[in-house]
Length: 95
Image 1 (cartoon, one colour):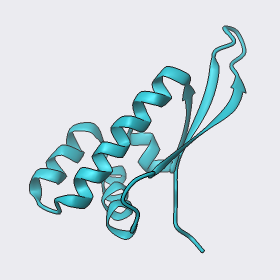
Image 2 (cartoon, rainbow, N blue to C red; image 1 turned 120 degrees about the horizontal axis):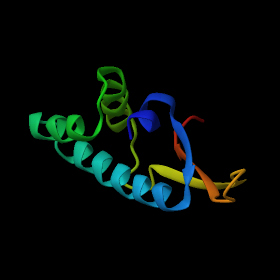
Image 3 (spheres, one colour; image 1 turned 180 degrees about the vertical axis):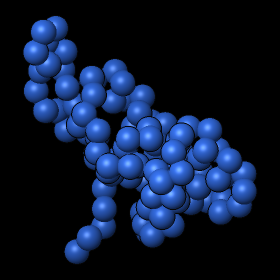
Image 4 (spheres, rainbow, N blue to C red; image 1 turned 90 degrees about the vertical axis):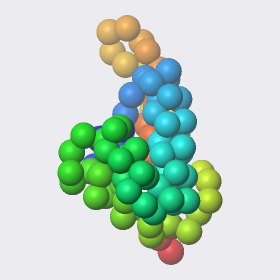
């Protein structure tokens, strides 16, 4: 979760990507609805660095979307065990 907000994208396996997307959507929605200290505390429970938590707050405040904050794209298969790799991206509203 820290890397997702720090870099804007993360490449991981299928099962981890599904869980990451689910938790990130809930977290961003919670921060958007409540701009109080409880939302910030919830954010800091999951995100471990100060820089990435600032980026997460900035992303939640600037977006006007109500859902669909992440995008999952199949990238390919990992060498070695042939696990399906998925890239999770934060969707920006740049025009």
